[in-house]
Length: 501
Image 1 (cartoon, rainbow, N blue to C red):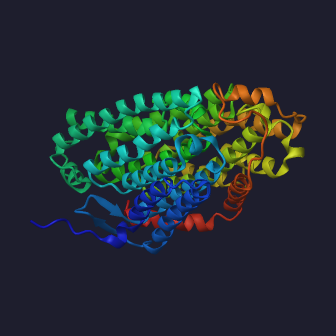
Image 2: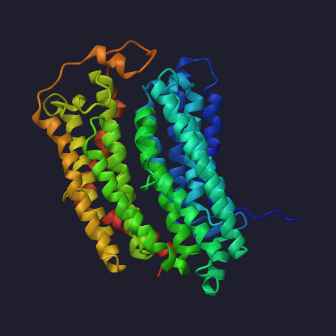
Image 3: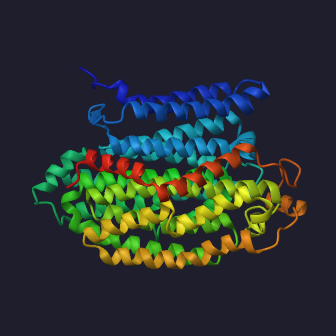
């Protein structure tokens, strides 16, 4: 018997993350405070940086590895860069937060690296078994990360809710994959595509049920309505750096597997799944934007906003075209910058104001904290799709793909949803620039921790690393809105790699 041939150089970004997780975990066992609070996060950043650099080295690789279980191509590597960029930002945002201290630094950052490795596995999966393994590898660490502020009831509730709902999602995915295997007799995406290409199974109830179940699970992970109900509660209760990581990386992983699975394995069944997916996208855009309007918690508002953003991205999957793939990748990169900039400001104000994640924490910071107000302003304008921001270019790209693919009506829904979103995005901007600044509230800071605060309540410094994340990603929003060509070129390379249409 011979084992599968493994292309170690193509697998190197995965090894960097999983190997880094082991090193970080062991380093966290050292008793030195410097090792735990400084060396561990530095090693985590180094692991993410190594995976990112190895991805640059492997750019242009287009091969199947480990007996065809994984595909390392431009789509996998581009998603790896998004996961690693988000991971580095999350490590910096977590540096002075309570969660690593309460959960132990080694465990916290090792879980972050392991979840990212699961996301990479899911993005590169081209076998049904690998899809399930990647899904579990990214989900289980996130269940724990959501509950890492163990003295706060909201964090424990967040982790428990995500665990329960995620377990149902895992079972649903397993049933769906089993049905697809039963209908086609193959677990490889290429084998499924070959069987469907013959045309005999199209319309088969077993096949359609399997497709529907897989779509439901991807919709759950990406916060697509009506499978989004967990999102506001989990996002609000989880530690804010973890919320930022989930909002970007989990959504990117779900969109990556949706692009690969539906546009390769199920491309011949496009007429069966595309109308249902387009309907889900339209409902998601409306539900997400309307749900965000009445929120006073910025984290809940951004959670509902992320639901709407998932609806926009799903439009790129619906059309099953190269242009749709390019538009989705472009928007995911822009969404990473917009979301991390916004959450960096939220974290800074949580620490400085004593008002938690209430929108009142942003009152008047245009005058008192302009270096925070500008990144948040750019993030809100970008998410709303205002010109000269990366979000605007991304939405135009998506609308172009939808019009080219015969789904112009869904492009109109994106425009309508963007108009509705102004009601809450502009409210955040108005709070920063048009309201008087509030004095820090020590009493409210204690209440914001729910129960048993782990440290004295009251305002404290956010840390230069949080300001740095806000500034860097805020500048990226503006730069990519004015000079989008580098990201266009990257998206076009990804589109050529997957070979769609």
